[in-house]
Image 1 (tube, rainbow, N blue to C red):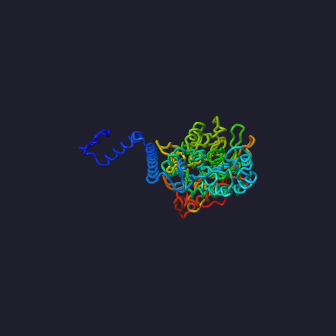
Image 2: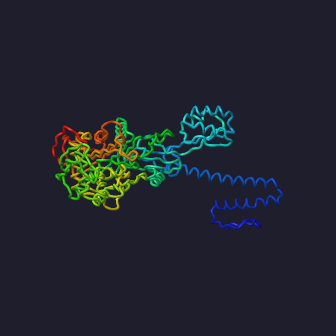
Image 3: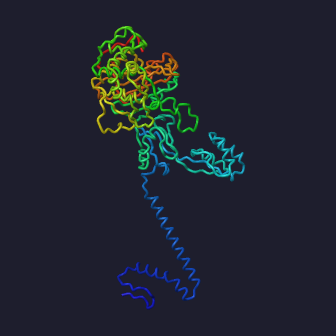
Amino acid sequence: MYRPAPGSGRAPLTSTVSPWLRWLTEAVWFVEHAFERARTEGKAEEDTRVRIFVIMAVFSGVFVCLALGAAYAALFADHGRFRGGSTVHALERADLVDRNGLLLATNITHYGLYIDPNEVWDRDAAFRQIKSVLPSISEKRLRRVLDGDRRLIAQPGLTPAEKAAVHGLALGGISFEPEDRRVYPLNGSAVHLIGTADTGGQGVSGTELAFNDEIRAAGQAGEDFQISIDLRVQGVLENELAAAAMENGSKGAVGIITDVQTGEILGMASYPSYDPNRRGGVPDGATLNRATSAHYEMGSVFKTFTVAAGIDTGRADMATVFDASVPFMIGNRRITDFHAQNRAMTLEEVYLHSSNIGTSRLAVEMGGDVMRDYFKRMGLLDAAPIELKESAKPIVPREWSDTTLASLSFGYGISITPVQMAAAMGALTNGGRYIPLSLRKGGAPRTTEPRRVVSEQTSLTLLDLMRRNVVRGSGTRADAPGLRVGGKTGSANKLVGGRYSPAAALGTFAAVFPADGPVTARRYSILILMDEPQTYPKTGGFVSAPAVGRIADRIAPFLNIPRRADRWATATGEKIPQPDEVVE
C-alpha cells in the first residue's frame, strides 16, 4: 500500500490506482496548497508565480476548448445545409425552379452602403464620386445622409461589383453591411407568376407569397422548391404574346397555357411586364397580374358554356334549329348578330357563325336556374381556386332575368378573370371534370373526386365543335399544321363611362389542342386575350387567334404532341374542306 508522508494531509492511495490518475491527484494537491506553502515559507515571489501560472492555465484551457469547438464545427458541420456562395440567411428561402429544375429565383448576398458624415473630409467631393460609380442612387437621399450628423444607410442592395466600385474610392466614413436579397435571374420573365419577396425573407406576391412557408421550409432543408411551369413554354408564350400585343397596339394582354387533365399551369403571362431586379422605372399597370386580378366581359367565348349547358341538359343537339332570320326581342331590347345570316340555323351553325340570337334563344329557353347551375359548376361565379392570393372574385349579375340570360349567353353581364376562363374551358375539354388550376407540379392535391360539370359525351361533342370552328368557323387563324387545334373566338366592347364603347374592345381566343382522341387524352389549353387592340378588325379571330396558332406550333415539340398529315380532320375524323370565307 502507498502511504503519503506523515503530516502531508493527503489521502492514502492504493497501489491499484493508475499512475496517470496518481500524478493528476498530486498535481491538483500541489497547486491547491501552493499558496499555503508560500506563506509558510515566506516566499512571496513564489506565491505570485503560482498565481500567474494558475491564471495562464485557466486561459489556456478555455482557448483550447474554443479552438477544438471551432475545428469541429468547420470539419464536421452538416454541409448539406449550405450551398456555395450562400449565407445562413439565404437559406431562409429555397431556390425556386421550374418543372425541369431550371432556376427562377435565388438569394444573393448584397450590401447596404452606410455613411458616417462626421468622418467624411470633403462632402461635396464624396457626393460626386459616389454618384459617378452609382448612377442609380437617389441624389436627394445621398445629399441628406452626407449633410446629416450621424451614420445612416445611403443605398441598400448593392451588388458585389457596386460595393467594390464604392470601396475603390477610398473615402472616409464609408462602410458596408451584408444583406440577403432575392434575385430573379430571368429578369421580367414569368414575373407576375413568380412574384417577389422582401428583404426580410417573406413572400410579397405571386408564387413567393402563395407558397411562402413551403419555400422557407425547403430552404432550411437545403432543397429547391419546384413549380409547374415549363420555362420553354413560358418563353414562347411571353414572346408571342408581346409580339401580338405590339402588333395590335394593345393596352394589355394575357396568356395562359394549362394541362387540362391535371390543371397544371405550364405558362402564364401578363403584358406589359417589368423587371423585379430594377429599382424604379416600372411602367404604369405593369405590376398588375391581369391573369388573376383583372376582370373582363369576354364576349362570344361564353357561347361555348351556353351550348355546353344546352347539350348536357338535352335541350338541344347539333341539329336543333334556331330562328336567326330576325332579331330576338326581349321586351324593348333588340338582340342582333354581328355577322347576320338572316336565316334559321342549327346549333352547330349558331356556334360556327357566333350567333348572338341563337345562343340567346337557347339561354332563355333553359331558364335562370339551369344557367346559374352550370355557370356555378364551371367556376364562373366564384374566384378561381388557384394558389395565387391575387385571384379575384368575378362580378356576377344580381338577378337572372331573361334579358340577363341573353347577355350572359354571349359573354356580357358578367366579368371574370382569365384564370376562371382557362379553368372552365379545361373542364369542358377534359371529359367534363372541374380541376382547379395549380402551380404545383402534378397539380393540386385531391382529397375527393373532381366535381362533374358536363358528361363525357358532352365533352366529346364540344371538342368536335371547337375543332370544326377552327377548320371552317371564326377561328381558322388559330390552326397549326397537324396539331388539331380547336377553340372559340370572343369579342366584346368595354364599358367606358357607363356605355359600351367600340373604341375600347377586347379580343379573346380560347383554344385546346389536340382536339381529337378520347376524353382522357393528353391535351392542353391556350387562352390569349388582347385588351383594347388598336388595329381593325378588333375581334378575337384577328387579334388573338393567330398568336394561338403560333404558340401551339412552337410548344408542341416541348410537350411531345405528334403531328398528323391531315390538317382538316375534326375530332371525329371527318374530312372538312377549307372555307372560302371566314366569319367572326
